[in-house]
Image (tube, rainbow, N blue to C red; front, side, top):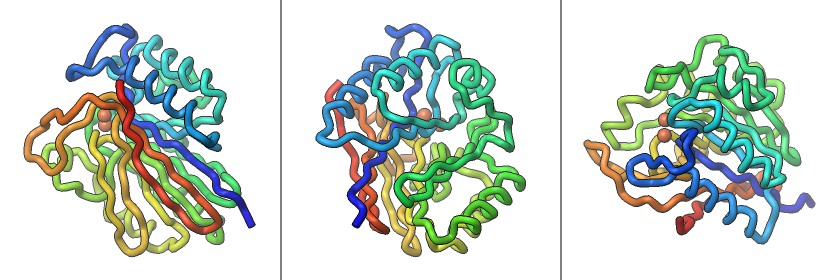
Length: 253
Ligand SMILES: [Fe+2]
Ligand SMILES: [Fe+2]
């Protein structure tokens, strides 16, 4: 029997080149550092850290370097994807991904689990997009790996979260994406960021949930953007055979 494996999802780090700079009252660098220290102190070592976008707030080379330094220090395999605040060209100068739009999506396997990363960003648009080519690649890849329990990671939310200010910048034409998810029953969960709040629901046996921001949170289910707290957070995903369990960790900054 396979043992438990852990994946950590960090999201919306919103780093600046200047480590002292704050966004909405939160020091994004110090808060991410607190998150990384908390992960280092977990009683288990995660197999993978996934950072689901809005990595930088100012798109500077230095901001991405700060992220790379903190992730490298953890000594855990990691992967990341852009959010609406990110410039892929600058990410490519810091990390070894060498992404080209439409070719940015990729997958990894963790002990029998298939993890698919989707780039929903089109810089500097706030909304999320997936091209027909991306959707086709996604579907083809899922069909080839039909026997593997699967988790999809992306920045934008593909289902509405009842916060009208952020639901305006959801994944566009999400019905095309959801049709693929619904026709591939091996998909157990869809994990996203972008909304800076914890959202969890289950639709047709698929878990849809967000990771909180590592930087600051906003009040859920509101008309207007309203800061809730400055406490950083992240998500832990436990996979064990075909089962998945997930929870949120809050970190004192
Ligand atoms: Fe964000
Ligand atoms: Fe975002």
